[in-house]
Length: 352
Ligand code: G6D
Image (tube, rainbow, N blue to C red):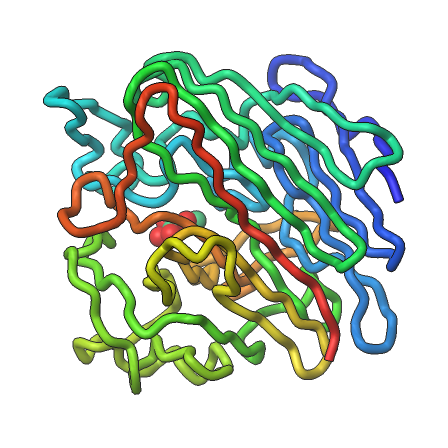
């Protein structure tokens, strides 16, 4: 159905920020801004045809630029944690920002979601391409890294996110999108997702230490608070024990998705709300997914002036495993010089 655009605001450098909206034939709309290639709105119907914005977000560029919640944000060059904020590649040690205890979280202080992007699109098409050049050493990573993020909204109500990258040196890569979803009545204005149900295609998760770095094990989740093999309300897992008997006070775990990593894009997880009849499916070709439930959120004046509190949204961050570069046995995180990186994640919106 094409793209419309509008001026969203002015960023910290005084550059005009443009908002782009894709709309499909079913009336679903997804909007983005070229400051950060951030997803700002996802407007979908409920079972009665009431359209609401189910994506959490901010009210202004300044809030997005200062954000450490990563609403709608693409994350790179390496999403999730890297222990000790360092890694060794080809015998050389690379030091990163320590912005989360002694770890580097989501590539540190310079966020991909705070950079200005080039855009390519045709007004009558259903996709938009955001791209930029990440120079050698940016965020502490080796190599000149050229990457793009293509968002497509098709008439099957799928938001398709395609990541592409190429680097002139061996480097590491782990993209994700850190959108928070709330399928309840009011969408992102709904107070919490605790009554919403999650299903995840995983039999194992990667347990973490006290600073949220995976130990390197894969632990069975059957019968624990992390067991989402069948649909389960989030509130029915919170307060229950993980595989070690520790009480889960909120979800912030990486799930090892079923499969051998060679099947391509397959369904990884679902979120649904029985009161609105909204359901979201997430598909990916990546081996892991972080389920994060906004456990300590308390932010005023977000999008539409809404206050976001604890458990206000759920993130389904497709990813390689956290700290894979430093963990024997985890999937390879290295992108060889000149090799083309490609990865696809899809969010599909339905009603039931
Ligand atoms: C917390 O541990 C979590 C991260 O996984 C999340 O990405 C961030 O909050 C927003 O640090």
